[in-house]
Image (cartoon, rainbow, N blue to C red; front, side, top):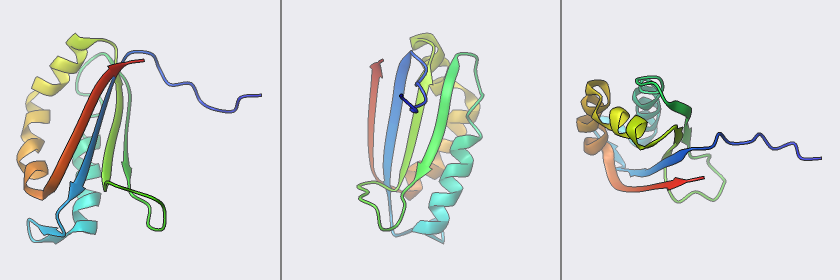
Length: 109
């Protein structure tokens, strides 16, 4: 019996960030919480967002990044609308200020 929740089908958009130890006058831990808050504020910006979650690294577990966005979009148009939405664009300066490294992958599932 499979107890796994099935992931919605669509265009997966995964972004992982490693944060600076300090930025914007805050510690990494404080900025991780703020990053989750600002990212989650974008969770329903446009139609076509099928799934949207933000995870923070768990101490004691094997983590190579600090923050992850795991999302699924209906199609490329929905992802483009999300990326170009003024509220999404507005969080970019904060994210760029706190991030040491960013990785992104988009793929169809």
